[in-house]
Image (tube, rainbow, N blue to C red):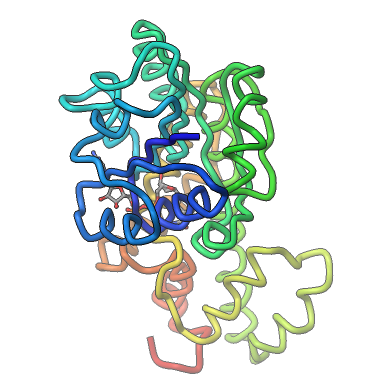
Length: 298
Ligand code: NAD
């Protein structure tokens, strides 16, 4: 299959490479030339714009930071809609506001283009080994038509969640759970250290019990080592929680925990930690408690 792929960042690069490994022909575009060159070296052809990437491909994937970037790449000048033929399929795998997915899908429909929103969870390691969790919104038959040959070449699971925007609503639920878990972990390990128990021993003792989680296994070692290299940047998690708060408030669904963690992230960003991994919530607790989880000075 010939697939246009737009957005070759931390996630897009390995996802595009996995599609090439699966035997697809890729035409790729990113505003950063070095990223394009890296995927071309892996077997893709380069396009000079999103329009050009869409011109010759029946399927187009976007993997971009947030709603404005997807709007620009799809609806803007030299965007996907200027190049894509009627009947083409756009799969937006970025994590964006569900309302914006609906708006973009509506514009696509006017141009005869079908769209799915299909954000992912799993981060760079799972993008590299092709085991992402993919959550999808849009037409069910359209989802079935791309599930095995495209989505499951990048992910270990692809679950249909409902109409357009449902993929991104599901992703927001994921991001709320991850953010609150990391904050709870930072709070608990800081309390243990202040009360005189080694956080490393706390982690060893509880990771197999009810409190244990994928988040704990990934983030406790980072907090204990004082290593906040991303991973998933605080700036991106702020973007997701802003979308979650908008979506929750529009649906009259209060989000008291999300609001609290959002303010912690805002404090960290104001303290120049926006590019740190989200496990740097440990730094927030160090500030308010005067105690660091890590033995290493922060
Ligand atoms: P990134 O910032 O590393 O990559 C985004 C890429 O898009 C960059 O290469 C940038 O140059 C390119 N870009 C921006 N505007 C463009 C445009 N108009 N046309 C073409 N290219 C453009 O981001 P990422 O970490 O790869 O994340 C992508 C999406 O996946 C985000 O929505 C993010 O929230 C989500 N996500 C990220 C992770 C993670 O761990 N990094 C995990 C799950 C989901």
